[in-house]
Image 1: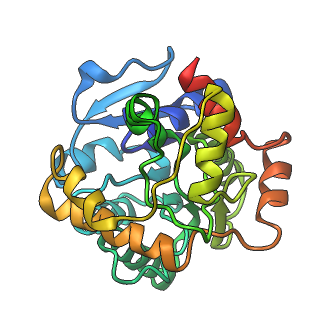
Image 2 (image 1 turned 180 degrees about the horizontal axis):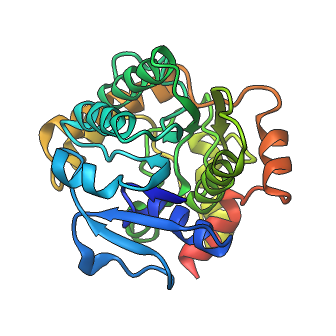
Length: 287
């Protein structure tokens, strides 16, 4: 049978596809633009959109397990519910859904609240799913590398509660392991939640210190100006999305993204190796 991966050309989705292919799974990748589908040999590429019901129905024919990833877009919630309903119609019974950590607590942040709503559908419809709840992606730091190296500041307002930053490659591998576990099970497996976190919980000052060590010069953390953060983001994203990101940052300040006891140990056992560290990630992107 076949595993369908949505959002397959994005950072997480591409890692999921590659990890599944590496493990010999039969993979179908749903993409909007096939020209971006540079996948390993044997991966089937289908063109479609999560709001195009006909393309979803076609993509889901013969599929046994679905990896559902929705980008942060204005209609993310609708996309997810449509996709899950079409999957049920197609007889798909095995799912891995990419949510976000603390989706149940960041209740005023649009893309968190939307994911929490999708989790509620999965629960109430009794879908056999693993819900992955990743923390902040280390890969976001690529977007601020030029600011850090050019101005000597770490500009992200992530506060002093701490974020358990996770490498996208680890997220993709955990997702692939769960997809194959469900795909190969002789029976439908119960609903499960996994917080996907990194090995260290870092504050803004911690992050700046690591950048300093890696670069060999002082990087400062100027503080938590979420209003300025929003204005900077508006230069290259819609105003609603920049505001969404500001609301998220404000919850970083009040709550952080702190893992539960046992999360790191569970992931280390699942992967069979240590989680990738923030320090190694920064060293890699600045090499």
